Length: 495
Image (cartoon, rainbow, N blue to C red):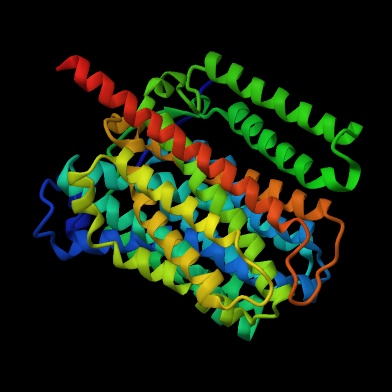
């Protein structure tokens, strides 16, 4: 027998009695929004802001956590990777759940879990438990992101209204990630526990506001058989095994039986995932959606953008704190210009997206990322901030401001409302998994150097790590340029 669950109906009468009036009409204009619409964007943008902030703020606190709990770089990276893998590994299930269970319900429950896990993680001192709670927070974020994005794409009509809402929403995420470094630095000066605790009360406050302003889903029936548990398990385990194999390889050997076995296991699980998607009546990923070249390109660009930056932040934070002995607040202020640039772009990106192709914006954004990494390759002991780091940070801010909203807008454009959760889940999965894999690769490179940190000197393997980041970013940029050229050729032929 199939268990049926009834999704919450609109219940207009009950809302009117309670003095609450849901947003039930599609917002078609980019101007003149009522206060309730803005409050909805505050809640959705605030949740995404916390998701981004939690990754980067924890990154600044890593050296302090390592000193207090006796954790080395290979263990510390799991505080970030655990969150990112929970986030990226279950985003597809999160997107599916938001489409079936109701976006409002999924978002609110996940925000509550995120807030409670934040508070608990700040109170414990067992490194494995902190990592487990970080993974749980990532799982919660995996449900908030596709639910939030699909609420926007089903509340705002495609065109100027949606572009404005999406630009505000996605810039909130990029601002959270960029400004998370600042908040992380400020809070770590007090205690690294404050850094882990900080998102909790804010998430719970957003939950209370969201109960009043998030529109309810229409009545829909579904069966538990519609959840692709096998697909979710196989994809998540595949990513976990891949990252674990790369991180462990420097200790056990790249051609050891353990490394080869883990990589083979990851490949098998990925093949199982594809097979399940082809045969399941309600797959996590309808493989036909991947025929959209725009969506695939957005996903690949997201992997390049976020993966390179995650690896950059991890290495530079360790270098600044462990080698140059910068304080957490000095690191935060050093990264501040990028956050300010991203935040300042929030009110302008909707107009840019109306006028400029997303592929063009992605090209310019990736070029800014590449220039930033190339500039940092000049780094030498004794260089001052304005010479070796400030230009890089400014370029990274420009790259994020252009790429982040463009990638999200391109990934969801032209997708039917029923698959908005899937499309947003796919692009965010690509972003987060890209971050986890790049971080694992960089950790392995640093671990393979076999050198200890010396005051004022570059980290062992640091230059090699940056060359890898530069190479992969260049590949992403060239691929996007190639697509633009191909689009131009097709347009000329059609004319």
